[in-house]
Length: 345
Image 1: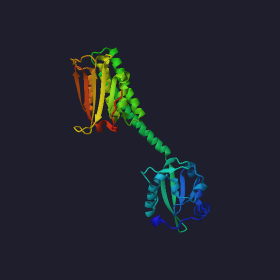
Image 2: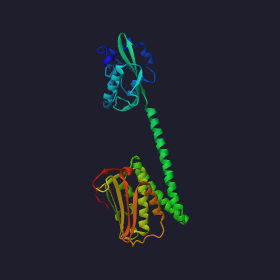
Image 3: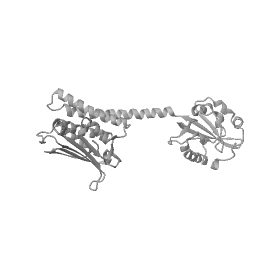
Image 4: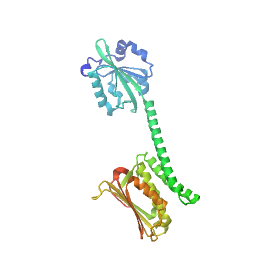
């Protein structure tokens, strides 16, 4: 162990050696912290009851073994480096602070620990008293606090989204009954998005599944084709609201209002003219002849307010069917998980 290395106790009877060198150590057997004494060769010469309890080893299995056996294989190099740093200037100190150290239990499982080292000199030899504290409960509480913080953030975000949906649904000259129906339908759309996000542990939602969920009632008449893209939480909410409004409009007065009508939804990423850009199009065919509206409907207002936050869009009231297109920087909404495109009906 560098400058700190002297003789070790290899070949000695470890329990006898420990008792002779550290008679006071055995007064600490029942302390609720782990105590491990190692010699200059990093061999374990004594442990207390708590180490046996938290790691599941019998004392005889540990005595004489390298202290490295108490750490996972993947972290032994790091632990060895930390010991060498300590050996170059031995003093009482915590080790591995900020390194997320784990101890290895007998069954191979791991527990998070904090470790303190104290150099000890006995009969001309140097030893190290290692203090090991199981911080599993602290980690659990920290994770719980993070989860609660994240939950509070999502609840506040959800309230803001619901408020926006309510304002768009209840304003204007709709009857209370119509407004209530529209509001509930939009909440259901939001709920489907949250279900997808939950299934993905809130990392992101697959765009294909999100669009399919919003159009599932007409799955046999809506064609989906595009690159597999994962969209983040806010973008997923935006896409869900846009597709919901387009679908609702198509059912009321567009292609989905007649049996022969169909919708093609296509999306792609990149291209020679627009590298790094995500584009999506919604094109209706086979429906009634489209007549541009004389006033801006509530569905379009939602699409416009949503698109202002994320990118460019265009709505064209072509006589053959409504066409919607959008373009957004990919890194603003998510990432590609697979390049091949294949149409599914």
